[in-house]
View (cartoon, rainbow, N blue to C red):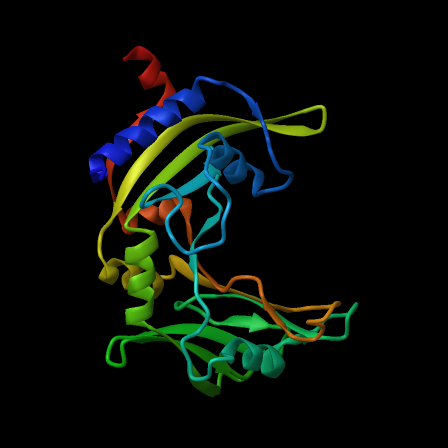
Amino acid sequence: MQTEQEIIDELLTKFTEIACKGWIESHRQHNTGIGKTFEDLLEKVEDNIGDPDYKGIELKTHRSNSNSFTTLFTACPDGPKPSENTRLRETYGEIDEKSGLKTLHTSIFATRKTIYFNKNKFQMEVNKDDKKIYLLVFDMDDNLIEKITFWTFESLNKKLERKLKILALVDSKSRKENGKELFKYDKITICKFKNFDKFLDAISNGKIMLDIRIGVYKSGKYYGKTHDHGTGFRIKESDLECLYDIFELRSFEEQKED
């Protein structure tokens, strides 16, 4: 069985081989093309399971100089009901004009209230006594309506330890040619997760947001049923250092000099 360092060294070697290819045409259109293309070059089979992307290492690819939010992981609420996303959508969702069905799409922070269609306000609360992160719902006069939806510290910590213990950040330049996007992967940073308390601090400080994307099937046999597009805990790429220690950084230019 390979050691952790052997797997890291293997990934760094493969990264160098990919970087040496120079500009590569995207294997998929739109934003997900950058990750899909890199994983194809690693010969990784695409899947939707919750395990890390490469032998225990989670891959996060992004365009150089980007400061967009990146999804750490997705997690449906732990309670109070198994169908909590459906309850939230039906109670607080907004009617989709085309389908006439309710959806709930909003981004929520612990440091401020998010106004949703001038009907309600949402906010996160880190409750260390209950060991839960709560979703707070207010009316427009800031009166608390409910505090019942939650994620347990235990379930969130398990996700982080399972999927994000070691993170590989891959930088890529991008350009357009003849209407197609091309990537040049030129930098990789290997990071190790600090601890769960740092994750909670990042939520409390407003650096991690909860991105709710609860939709609904608009056709087919599941018509009208909840379609969770991924309720994600997301952070700006520039703030990842509050969660991770960097212990390996390689660029293509450095590799060429070795």
